[in-house]
Each structure stands twice: as structure tokens, then as C-alpha cells.
Length: 274
Image (tube, rainbow, N blue to C red; front, side):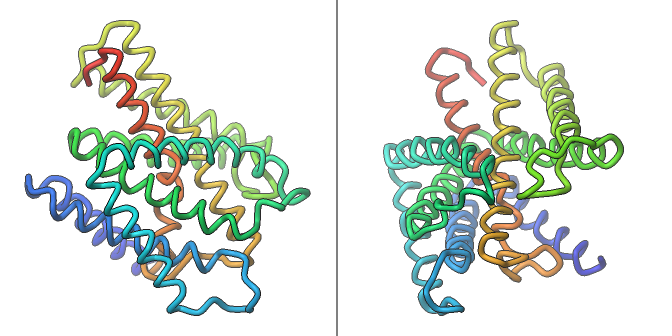
């Protein structure tokens, strides 16, 4: 437990420093590229393979390519938008995979290598785009995901009866999901009351985006859990003592970040200035 707490404190300090300590974009840029590379390395280890164990050099090469694609997307907005769109389509398809696991697992095939490129690159570029808009919007995204996860945990532990996806994550319940959504609504209303000045229509659109983001975060968590179960691996890595790997920490954000960033982009296009 002590190791877990220390790791969490260090991780929070590093992320917050990159977000708020300087106006330079380089610390956040480097953090995103490092996260993409390590997440890519861990993703490769979860993939189907002929040999019992994946070679570390191949995994690092894969991680390097993920970091390279992410770097290109960070420089070119059009590439980032294409990645977000491809990511959202992939997440929509993953709903079917999660609902039908383990009866159907034909998704567990070499195409997951390409999916990893898309999902990880889309997530890190979306996180960077939200941060570039305002560090406080990235903080809001974190609060949505963490708040929903905490609300789901406590409500599910107390009242959970109906399992959300028992074959993928036996501890998650529908009651917990409702608790997470309720927590999201509270967070959004607090932000609206103290920091925003939205009309009724704009508020409803913003609420819809926040709730969809929470649903996406749950899907991201379930999808990574499903892949780890299929691969027979408990943690995606050991780079974060007491917490597992980078993928274990950002699984919810893999889905939530591109959807939230795309939603903010669309709201801006229709005149909702956040």
C-alpha cells in the first residue's frame, strides 16, 4: 500500500507540473510521447502471438512506432482528427466485443496491432489538444473519469446487484455505473455554477458530452480488462510500482479523451465557446 501511495503521489506531481508549472508546451509534449511509447510497448505484449512470450525488442520497436505516429499527429491537426474519428469508430465496434465476450473472441487477432496504433495515438493527441485548449479542461476531464470511477466503486460496493459485464469485469455493476453518472452530473454542475456561463441549451449539450465521456471511460476500462483476460495477463506492465503499467492507468482515458476532445471541437464549431 505504501508503495502504491508513493507512486501515485509522484505520478500526480509529474502530471500536474507538466500541466500547470510552465506555459511551455515541451514538458507536456514530451510526457505524451513517453506515455505513447510505453503504452505501445505494453499493448504489444497483450497481442496474439505464435511464441509463448513476446520479445522485448519487438515490443519496444512497436512502442517506438506508436510514439512516432503520435508525434506526427501532435504536429498536424488533420492527422489528429483522423485518428480521433478512427478511434471513436473502433470504440463503437468494441461495444459488441465486450457484450459478447467470451462467446465471441474473433476480435483477438493480428488486427489489434493496428488498433493499438489508433487508440493510443488518438488518446495522447486528444489529451494534448484538451490541455492546449486549457489545462483546466484537462483537469476537468480527469475529474470526470476519476470521479465517475470513484462514484461507481462506492455505489457499486454498497448497492451493486446487477452485473454490468460479468465475464469481463465481475466487480462492475449497473448500480455502480449509475452512481458514476450521478457523480459526473454533480461535478459538471459545480463547474457550471462557479466557472461557466452557459445557456440552457449549451448546458444540456455540455452535460451530454460529459455523460458520453463517462460511458466511454467505462468502455475503455472494460476493453482493456477483456484484452488482459484473453491474453492471460493480470497487469499490462510494471513500470508504475503498485499500479501496474501505463495502460492500466490510462485505460479509461483511451476512450474518454478522443470523445471529449472531439465533442469540444464540435461544440466550438457550432458556437459553444467553452
